[in-house]
Length: 552
Ligand SMILES: [Zn+2]
Image (cartoon, rainbow, N blue to C red; front, side, top):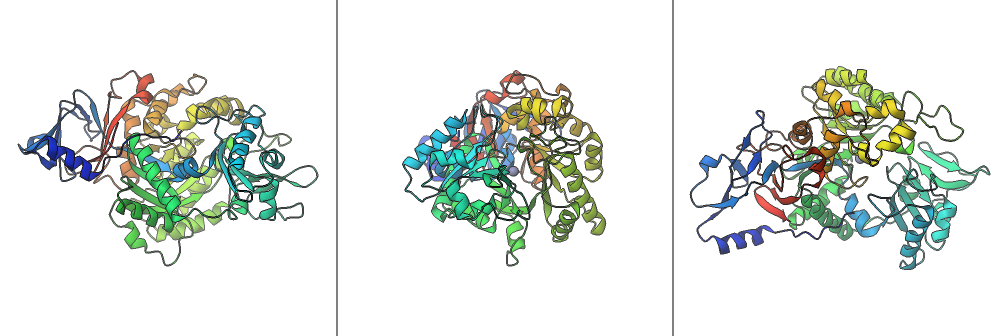
């Protein structure tokens, strides 16, 4: 799923090729012409030519005579795309060091036997006693329609501790050896957050909800070399999808340092906007981190509730089909709204933007409460606090979101990947029709973005544009046609709105003179192609700061 055989072209290679081919050309200046240049500026202009000088966009008329000329031959130039909420480089870490347990269309696992087989294969080439970590299993896509349990994972190996993480990232399963290492047993007390699931005999069955740290903290951390390798890996994957900026949620100061180290090695070419996990070390130099540069810190990330497809998203009304013996099950939050509000206020006072993960409408209520209380206690202008995923808001909540100038990032990819199951299992037809209610948000003038939440689903902003415009599920049905939005609005949700959402609108997000030349060349124009084909438009070239960093 995350393979890329694409070539990354270094600055030196580009300059070398240019000077070899065009002796007189000024390598610092380029004219792109004969294209469809979809600027996404305030007037929605489509131009035929644009210039780039010293990494910035300039009007075509201002390009000097000796500039390099690129003939776009009718192809489309767009502002570079945003991965508006993800967990870079966890996709790379998973691809390089973990076992892919996703079901189609992302991965190969369709049955419990498949899942056990791929783990067993990994065990066969892993020294006994070493951890095996898997990622991406989905109980609702397994033929057995249940979570794997310790007994299933014990079949794969009892000589290795095994820990596998649900596709949502909100649940995990340990085998017996891993439970023993984590000292999770029949007599273990219930944890202060999350749930240790147990069988009728009181023995932990291996499934842990919303507190994977109970097990995962015993897994040796990735080495710095491994982490940098994953960054370089995902850099190639993202650039090949036309991404020029990634908004990374829940990062540690260590990750910020890794990204900067990788950029220095010329292995990380994207812009990164980082949202730290709450609980920032006191010695962290916030001012320096928030300063300019390609890797910067914008805010702090919270997880308030869980995921709808893990039954842990917190809804006001019960799930459509509730888990066995739990007829009123509506999910839960990770903390009270007062606890959230107290913590948000601290970060709000410190000058941060907050990004609160909330999927169910009860979780969203709590996020809104915390943001409203912070605004009351310490009024600030133009704070742009975010709600992440925001999958099942009620219409009255969208009104409040507008009033409080909150900006959501919607996980619209759910419509495609899980839409059928939201309609039939988790939310039921009425609530599912308004999952990720982009048209309702747009109607209210709410600025929003959309995202893949990689590694939950593979990074692919054009797929998201396609989802937003078509709302077609994996079964090929249209889910909530009234929430579809026009192509241009969808493109803005991965470009100009995403720049605004991360306080980058003065330098990024549209093709306008003075902005950074972060650009993507597409084979076809999403604005004019048949909407059903948007997700298949090839990305031909990705340019960051005027430099070609990916070419198909
Ligand atoms: Zn996320």
